[in-house]
Image (tube, one colour):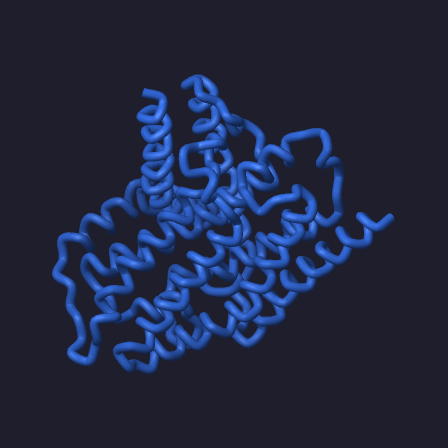
Length: 318
């Protein structure tokens, strides 16, 4: 019975991130519309879009290979598993032993690699442009993410998320400049990885600026629905990482009672709302930068993460 209960909680976390990902996107769009004094779409509009796309027939180009059909399912599965491994409302779940930052980065990197291949598979110019830009940004974003992981591992002594969360909530963490640098670097990487402003504007399809939309431009129907949901899950994943690593308040630590887990769910939803509000405010007040300036922007995250690791080494030797 204990195993069944733990399995039920783990499945509940997987379903929770799957349900909240479209709601987070709908909330950000609604807040942005309100800030611009527009009515905006309803909060449940992303769910309607997914249902509409799932009902449509998938139109596939004649030049597409088997990879083009296979990639949406692989990208969705890898992103969903990655998002489900991040502790959202409780630690010490059934599969928490596999919730390692290195494994999550590997899953995200694999999804990015295959999506870039799918963008070039059909042979259109837009897909090639989007894939090349995605690869260019990834050359800086992934090393920055690795440096952030090194910083957290040096501070907490592990790359396992439950261990890091337990350390972050203990008095031993204190006030560390290296963690502040890692937080700023992670926010920059999250904006770049999710193609948000100022890196890209997800609300437009302008061929001179789009990155993610260019790679999925040839997809339609259920394939496009899976890729859209995967992109929303990726945004939720980064928000969850920021919430559980740097603001781990309210997470149930090794708790088996329903009350602590319910408080953890409510706290997690509140964190998502707060980050969504800040994201909408940021994207409303900041203009999109030129695509050739994006490497400089992501390079700031790499330098901050490198300085965080260096500062940790220096402070540990004192």
